[in-house]
Image (cartoon, rainbow, N blue to C red; front, top):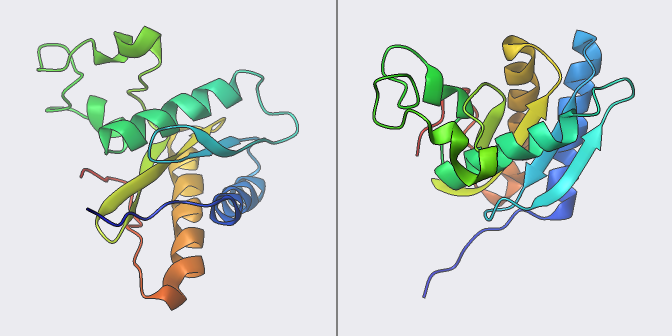
Length: 159
């Protein structure tokens, strides 16, 4: 039997708050979603003036990152992104009724080497979504640091 780590609401809320604070500093209206290991939302927040499509897109990105254990933009990064035309996973973004997100803004949450969830962002350009996603991961890292557990805080995550 295996002991597993799970994100809880307080941690998810801290991640969302940090991403929102970064978005406010950047002047971009974001939607942020944090999901558990199964891809189900724990916390989701849409900033004032953020697009109404943001919640679904942010959830899709978080769901994809958690489920496929990689940052979503890696699927389409040239030259070897697996979802690029001619590569082995071309068309994967059509999977799961079009829910699979193969573009920037989704990051797996990796604690002590295990993927325990995901964070997705929608509303900014690629650089802004990455900055807000990293802020969320940094907040989790700071929150759980006293426990001795480590969070992978980087843009290009592939587990």
